[in-house]
Length: 208
Image 1 (cartoon, helix red, strand yellow):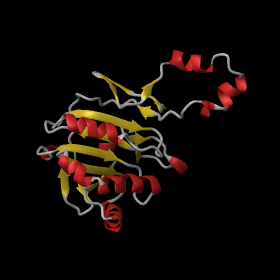
Image 2: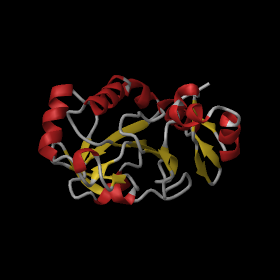
Image 3: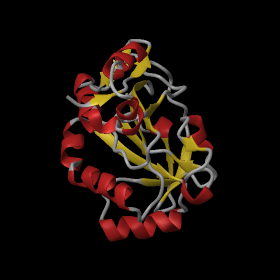
């Protein structure tokens, strides 16, 4: 069984990971040698750390207007004909980000069937995103949050990233319905982790 921490929401817990209370963690290690308790955490499955977001399912999604890689202006409030899968990612041309967005590219037909529009956001410039989109043949908009305003609104901004870089978007996934209400929120602390797209798809299915 995969261990993890689920995000608390007004209606329960998002995602399908196992929620471990502190007392449960204590019992797992109780009686083990001191070295095993602290030096060998791999004795239990790794925990995917999720940031508890300020935005929760049921909240109104903050509106925004961002320039896409083709320099067009994309407004969230104009995306009312479809549900929106809003993704934040750290940087273009990096391994995990490329893997994540290529997965979304290859799954586009599935998201079309779920009546969903994918929007992917990073703090890269529109010019960088345009080159990356052309190279990877991404088939959905890449949006530049160069001024970091939208990442802040969605509580998806690192105070400090790798190599001392500041103001980098956290890897995050939000599902926003046609009324502009957040139905799923996941913000990951570890940039090497990927959002739970099975949970995203389940939420989208429930909206159709």
